[in-house]
Image (cartoon, rainbow, N blue to C red; front, side, top):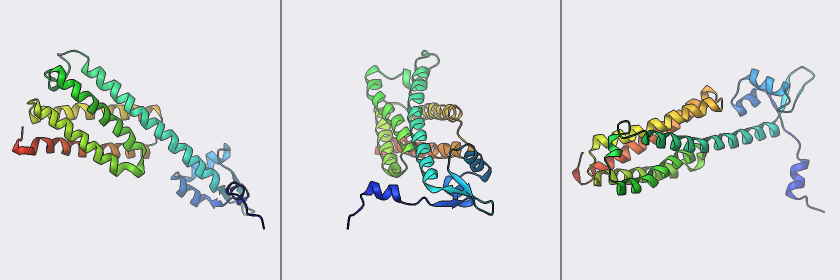
Length: 219
């Protein structure tokens, strides 16, 4: 007896049809939104003899996957937006830039730049890779710890190091607001982005404090 290949099995597998409530729960949207998508032809649906809608689970999951891919792409944009914003703010002139940065020797700046770039890149990865957030959070802590050690080694006081943290956090949050507006994220999606950024920022701040608390120095 011939055995079907995986692709043949997928092609012949019957579509599972979900009720309106089940489909809304799967997508995380309200009923009016899903009805509108169905009327526009974005998802397959039909009506039972009793007039109730049924939705293709296959189409719904494809919609979720496409939405997830779009969000990951937008999260990558966040890193680029933040880096550009931070660079602009640092290049506005000595009178406008943060003293913690302008008072550093060029050699120290050269050592800090790749750490700053890596930290911003980790933010984008952290937002877009749910299954790897634990590892990425730990890596962000390590980068922040090294950043703090560099500042401390240059004699930068703890207060100035915290000003550096606020400076970078503002660049990220301002970029996140711009990203949410540009991509028309829903309120729920915007809150999720904010919560994730806050979690990461908290750990970066704690790592920075740890760098200064080593060897008993408090700034």
